[in-house]
Image (cartoon, rainbow, N blue to C red; front, side):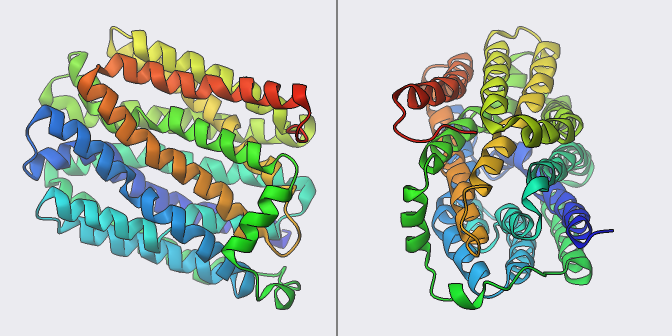
Length: 400
């Protein structure tokens, strides 16, 4: 087997475990916030958004720095650092005594982890250009596997052992993930490292601005994350509004959230190959349109089954949306800057993740949950329009 394929499958396995760890706790953060003493509904909506967004606040600043260091020294080392950072952060969250401490440890998670961006930068650097769409799509499926299994196990564990045990058990999984990376991942394409030792995160920002189409792709990534992430912290509250009993809320939330990852898992390899064959632009536009329809279906749902179907469709759209944008970005990166430049794409995702949950919490608390889903759909609907607008005026090169 070619080395890039060995690295891909080793990182795929490691990221599955890491994503199970992260996905197991995220859907239940609103319920954990209640357990920590925030019982007022309005306050719970706001804190859910703040706690969900906290790691993205610090990661936006930290990840471009980690990415530049990866290009200077070792991309594999940055992957290892990131996965053990997840383990440390999860363990600390399990010891939270109040919502303020939980918020603090989520900030720490963003500063010291960043496994997804580190693994993505490694794969872009180590994979031949002709196979990058496929490799990025496959790496996306590891996130989807974690998104399927994590909420299910998180719901079972929290139901019978308590939510704190979920944090600690998932921290152990992250440690195992780090061991896999150490043992099986090999870094080969490092011939350009000596020439890039002085590259900084600020220099990468300047280079990114000069690359045709790069900035618009980052803007589309922000919008895609805002639209698809905004509903996540409010999902338990919405299911409760639709009639799910409190005794079943954790398990039903895990199933409804997990089905999105399952559909992404099935669709991602197929769509990834289409990105390599047809180009990213058409895949992005098609995926954004499907995601918009799915989010509108959330907004008008009158039963849990409708939400279940809508989230299945949303997962298919996600299989093409961000991976296609990441593929476009990866093909424009100068050699030797892969981790640093891909960390900018990750920071764009983080910016969307940072802005969306508090905005969604604000809308949910003061306007309602259904308008929150409508706002998410509007964010995604802007992506095809933005690509069309840019192409028509020919200000920058369109997404290929």
